[in-house]
Image (cartoon, rainbow, N blue to C red; front, side, top):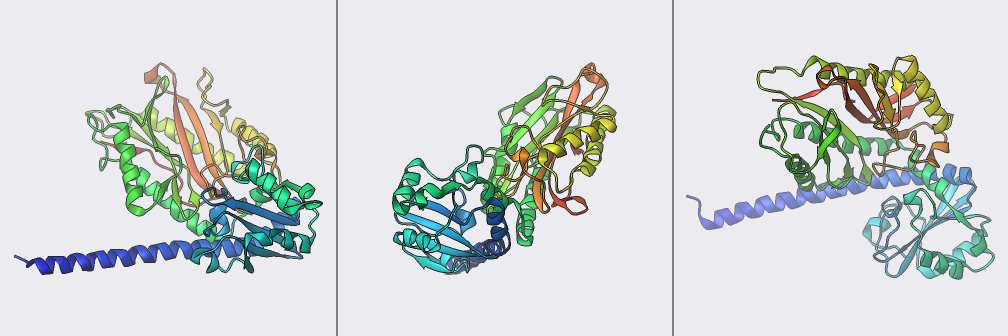
Length: 435
């Protein structure tokens, strides 16, 4: 039997190892975000400021009231108020942290100058910008971090003529975030890979025992796995739901998973200032079944085939709205019906509706949007390295349901490249099976 001191020593060794491992992981994540920030500030930000016609950009923060872009800026401790200031000078952007301080931001290499918040007016006056971007937006949340009182404070601090030169930076923010650098794709791909791995484990007998496990049991299992890894959940509680002839039966509640269920998970993982959005679908075998019914397998196959019909219609250089028109035409040419969300036609066709929203720093991000529910972003031009959710729903009639249509959701995270669509993780291709 081990002596008490050996147990204590072993525990200390384990704790020390875990502490070191955690510290190494924390530094790894910070260093990845540091590289992303350097590449974005050096290569993306000058282009975004030029395209938006903004000479100087101010991101203002208060202690305990940070801007949505605080992580993008490099964090930093703020006492009172602080500003991240960016001034376009030729092909380079001068970068100032006025107020934010501390190891993470000071060691990031992202800023040329650190100083007190009281230097703001002096910095602005010395550069005499004609258009000053600030984070105000009617429709884009991450570009709307400036409070009414902070706006009034900026007007007073800058004085005229600069107070009258402040304009919305929503286009700048959208372009800055949605034009991706290589290190972002690596980090986002890691987050998306974790999301897929956990989703497929949750839709298996590792987690689900038909007749016993509830939908919320599976959702809490996912939350626990995130907690273990120091990750966040992008959409709060994961949506674990069952779909039947009348649509969604139940979502992440006490409803018990039963044989014959078609069950889905829709959620996202937060890692290193990125948020994913993915789905997977499973069928729960009934007693005596060894494979899903042919009707359900066919419905899944038709959903997957719709992806190949849509992909060629998405190209860089035209607006998202124009792209949606091309997508509708491509779907109809392939024999699919194009419908409004959850309004399938009463016929034998497979109907499709889609919501190809941007992803990246959040599960619903701020670049060009192939959706009807982000109207401003649908006017943005599709560009290379744009990350978006390849999300659509295919409704196929099921004979066993009297011809009512089964909704199969397909959602993977993709990127627009010169020669077409590429996925940043393995795209869905198989109907999962729970015994």
